[in-house]
Image (cartoon, rainbow, N blue to C red; front, side, top):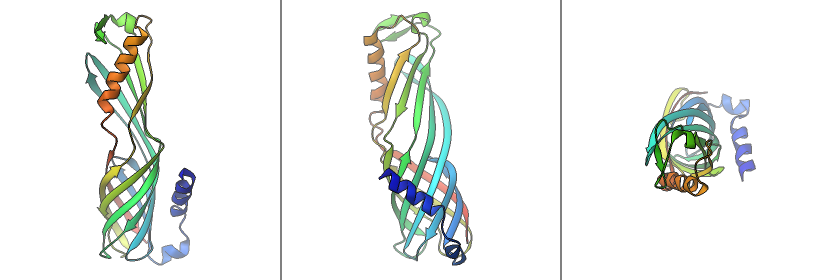
Length: 214
C-alpha cells in the first residue's frame, strides 16, 4: 500500500505537459499542521481531482510531566496523496487519501534539582539526562473538507481541514544517562509520559495553499 501511495504521489508530481496546456494542473506551496512543502494537483473534471504533496517542519517546545520539565522536539516529514470530490462543480471539495508518515519526536530532560520518579527522589547526578523517542504509524489515512478554487487559470488559494488517522503515539527507547535511576522507576516514568499522549490517536489537519493553475 505504501509503495502504491508513493507511486501515486510521484505520478501527481509528474503530470504530462498536455494536461498542463488544458488548464487542469496547479502548482502550489502548502503550509500548516502537516508542515510546509510543494503540492501539485490535477483537476480531472468539474467533479474529480487528485493532489500530491510533501511536507516538512521541525518544532520544539517545553512541557511538564509530573515533577519533570521536558524539552520536546517534533519533526514533521510526510508524503501524501488526496482524491478530491467537488460535489457542486466549484471549489468546495471533500477529500480522502493517505500519507506515508515519517513524523517523529524526541523528549529530553536534564534536571538541575532533585526530582521524583515513581515516588523515589533522585539527584541531578543520579538522573543525568532523560531521553526518549516518540513514533507513529508509517501509513496514515486522511479525511478533509476544503476549498480549492474552480478550473479557471491563474493564481489560486485553498484551505482544508480534517484529520490524519495516525494511531497512538508510541514512546520508546527511554533512558537515563546517570547510573542512579532504577529500571522500575525509569519504566514508570516512561509509562507516565505514554499516558499523556495515549488519547491523541488522530492528528488535526489545517493547511493553507497558495499556487497557480495553468
